[in-house]
Length: 148
Image (cartoon, rainbow, N blue to C red; front, top):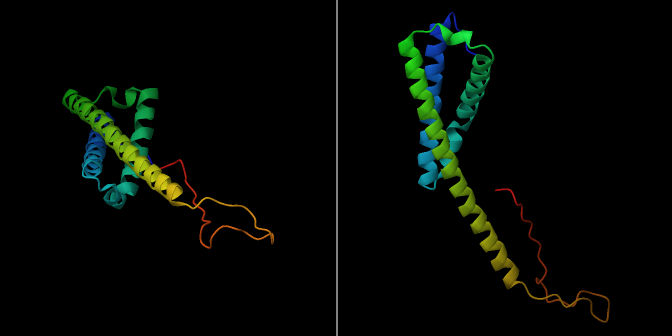
């Protein structure tokens, strides 16, 4: 989906509103990450993805054809520049918070895996009758995924 603008001013205004909405969502998500409640961000993840896709497509269109907003009102273009700076700052903060959450989660998963591995009884192989000589329940499986 792309913006349906009638003229450069309309396109710049729509892009300004889009930037502001996306920035607000990023800031909200970042605050949830900082509060260590990232699961709450799922409630607006779809909207954020949709807006981000429109933003990406529209900024690519403008990069290829600057005339799409070249003749827009100077005040609107100035507001759009400021909104873009705010968006980029929010994006950077979101990335940092996301990296922190990822590091914490990976650390927790590794600690749990280490604890489980340390609590396992050593396997003793097969007994004289060909059966498993390990005590009942000593064998267990755990699967770890490197992606968090």
